Amino acid sequence: MDSQTLTRPAVLILLGPPGAGKGTQARMLQDRFGLVQLSTGDLLRAAVAAGTEAGKAAKAVMEAGDLVSDEIVLAILRDRLAEPDTAKGVILDGFPRTTVQAKALDDLLAQSGQRINAAISLEVDDAEMVTRVAGRYTCGTCGEGYHDTYKVPAVAGTCDKCGGTDMKRRADDNAATVGQRLAAYHAQTAPLIAYYEDKGNLQRIDAMGEIGAIAEGLSAIVQKAVA
Ligand code: AMP
Image (cartoon, protein in one colour):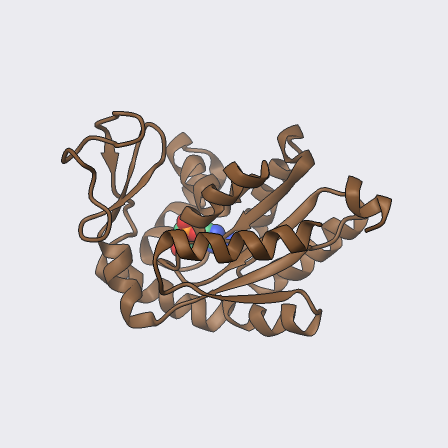
């Protein structure tokens, strides 16, 4: 381990189709390693809710299950990376999603002498993803995730973690849009697995199992990657 590695902020990438568990696992890694989860989907949803120019341009594209333009996503990502809380390191959740974004990230990191510690591919079966995504919802207060079948709160409609009762479902978490999101993943994002494999950054994890077991496997990968 050299001194540069110690002082350089960690950059981890979670790759995987919608429903693979990127958000759930990124939240866990954030708590465990003190890194910041950076979800371009969350940033875009916030832009849509705030009615910014970027949000207005992104709204219909997101509702159709297509990818928002690289230009908009890169601008949002750059702004977020400029905030001081990212100094210890970031877990990129849902970014990059295209080769253009991956190359732009390489350039951005090179400018500040940073590098990617690991790109981790969460490997899952497509058939399962539609069920997973179509049944999920989150607590609007604390962001804890739930599912109609796989993870129901102890008291229906009340968050186990914070007691909040404002449960939210994403507009794009319906069976029709999920199909298009999966297609976009295979056409535009899956090629990034080979991109990071060629660079020697790729790690793979079977993400079909139980959330806690996957979290343990991921933690072991991250522990090594940031050491
Ligand atoms: P997610 O929350 O990661 O599932 O993203 C939700 C939606 O936001 C996607 O279906 C895309 O429309 C858009 N989106 C999120 N991240 C990106 C990205 N890196 N590039 C393009 N579009 C994105």
